[in-house]
Every structure is written in structure tokens, then in C-alpha cells.
Image (cartoon, rainbow, N blue to C red; front, side, top):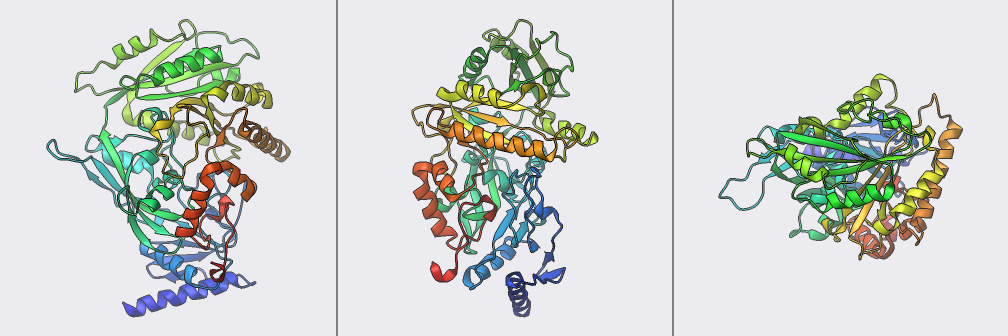
Length: 517
């Protein structure tokens, strides 16, 4: 055992020396205990879903346990090598290279076993049903495993092929967020390796500063290796509804009506329909052709909500939907309802993915922009957005739906707009695809410039929006992003990652030397 540990440390030393050498010479593969270090300049570690940034690491670590990560970070923290940085990579669904590490080390978290454990609370038992799961596991894995015992997490993202640790490092939002809060509000415990290499278990009552720092912390304070996720009873079916609008004020008013019905509504989203192509069906579960002829150059809106149907408990989801839609002011006769299994509903984006992949439209650049917008600014933001894009040519969904501020824990590192008096906050996701056949490199650059202008204008006091899954060009912009929360964020960085080893792709902190800390 001691010999193996000695050999592992020697391998790390050789690795770091090689990383700091102008030659960048690393043998491949390099044995690292039970894990592998791979030298690479052409790997998935330099690629993400956005396909906008391509930063190649000098090495990739595929750990077999959190101890491998701890050993690496402990060594780097204690060494005098001041150039090496480390990024954890889950499913690679970042947009702007946030999980990349130029000339550094990328840790591929999917090599750590998922090791899922489901605890179903007994009737006379205190506490909650929960799942313990590896940070590199995917949410789809947790769904499949928990449904075997009739349970599921309360809060989701729209796309389930994302890693547990990845979404918890950002927030994790979807149509359940208005009711249960984001995914970071539904975590009971975490195992984390800090930037100093410390293996720590944390919760709201144990090492709580680390717990709240890591949640929504953009990977800046530690790497999530395991999480305990809150579970609830899962329904068998879902009644899934879409209603269409030709007026934005009516659209948002009805969304806020549904927001006030958490006892009846289990999921709430909405989207802008910028062109006729978008209107001709945005999900394979709904009719490809709707029952009206849209006016040319007119923008429409759609509310999407769902009601769980437990069936065995005697609920009648269809009657619940009828009572809800009677109170709504959608366009006459333009409401559609389908019944699907709970699994198919949650996995709905996967179906769209398979369709796009079959046409070669999935692995294309995705110049996305996500913003949290206060209720008072949502109409101005909509006008700003539509004035900045060409609705007739837009490819991809534009999500718009409301959340409730009090479902977010202010102790976490997540950032919402600076208007605490406004309870309602909208999430807007401009999820554009830039298909090379219709959008050249110049076209893509233009989209990115427009996104920056939209974000800058929306962040000004008149609207007061904040970026979600943020990307900022400088530390000064990051200070503005965090606002009054910056001092706490920076203090947490000094406490848990004082050398700024972690998550260099975010561009928040510059790497420092041990001698300067």
C-alpha cells in the first residue's frame, strides 16, 4: 500500500513537472493509482455543447474515486507550480468552455462509479426519502433507478443527460422550479473535494459554509463527488397541456395565475413562438399542425403546464386541467392536452435530441443566452430581445416562464436580480442553434455580439436582469454580476480554493502562487 501511494505521488510530480515544462511532454497513458492520466490535445475535454470555445488541456484525469481527486489537488496546493489549473467535467453541456482548462488538467467525472443508493422513508419514519448518488452520474440514471421504487426527485432540468454535480454547481431549473425551487434547493448533503484537496461532507448543519458555497458556486470552491437528493412519490402519468396566445401581457398574466396554483399545477413553463416553423409543433407529443393559420410576421406565445396523475390515489388529472383552463385567457380553441408517462414527460427533450441527431442538427454551435429577469422588466426584455433578433429566421426555442424568489436559498452562491421586493422572477432562455448550413462563422460571431448587447442592456438598472449560466469577459464584469454578494463569494474562494486552482474556464479568478497566499 505504501509503495503504491509513493508511486502515485511520483506520477503526480512527473505530471506537474511536465505541465510546467515548455515541452508539455506527458506519456500517455500515465498510471495514477487505479486511475489514468491521459496526455491529449485532441479530446472531448476541449469540446462542449456550445461548440464556441475550444481550450485543450495538457492532461485528462479519469479518477476511480474522490481520493484520486483529493490527492491531485492536495499536491497542487502544496507545490510551487503556479500555472496548473483544474476543471471538473461532467456531461460537457457547458456553452462557453466553463468546464475546460487551457494547458491544465480536466477531471472527467463520469469515470467515478455512480453508486446509486435509494432510501424510501417508511410511514412511521422521520425524515425524507432520498437518493445518494455520485457527482458524475447523470440525472437520467437517478430517474431510472428511483422510479423502480415509485420515487423521483422533485426538481429537474429540461434535459436529463446532465451530471448531478454539474447542475448543482449552477442551479438547475425547469418547470418544477416555481413549486419546489431549483435543484440546489432540493439537496440534503454533499461530499466535496475543495480546492485545497480536502475531502469534506457538508450539509445545512455540518460544514454549512462549504455546502452553500458549492451550490450554485460555478465550480469555484470544490468538486461535488456525491450528493444526497430529496425524493418524493412519483406519479404514473402526466397530463401535459399547451395553450397559445397572441398577446404577451395576457400570456404572462396567465402564467402568473398558474404560478398561484401550486396545489394543482406541477409543472409550468412557456415559450415565445417567433415564426411559423416554430408554431408547427415544438414537440413530437403534440400535433405537428395546429388548428389555425398564423399571421405572417406575427409573434405568438405558448404556456406549457402539467398535472401529475397518480391514478392509484384516485386523482382525475383531466378534470383538474379543465378547471384550470376555464380560468385562462388563451386564444379560443387553441389549447392542446396529451397524456404521457411520467418518464416520457421528464425525458421529453431526449426525444427531440434523437430527432435532431438524425438530421445532423444536434452537434452544431449553440450560442445560448439565459437571463433571470425581474417581473417589472419582463415586457421590456421581451421587446429588447425581439428587436435584437430576426424572428422569421430564428432557430431554436425561446423559453419564458416565472419562478418564485422565496424558493431559492439566499445562502447559496446562485445569483438572482437585485430586487428582493419582487417575488416573481422570470427565466428567459434564448436557446439558439447555429446550423453551419444556414449560419456561417460570420453569422455566428454576429449572434454572439447580439447576445452580449442584449445581456449588457438587460443588466442595466432599467431592467435589472442577471445572467444564468453566466459568461463575463472580465473580473470587473463578474463583480458587477455578483453585486452585493461579491465580497461573500470572494471570501469563500479564499477559504476553499485560495490558489484559484479550480474552474478556470469561468474566468472569475486568476491562478495565484502558494507564496502569495
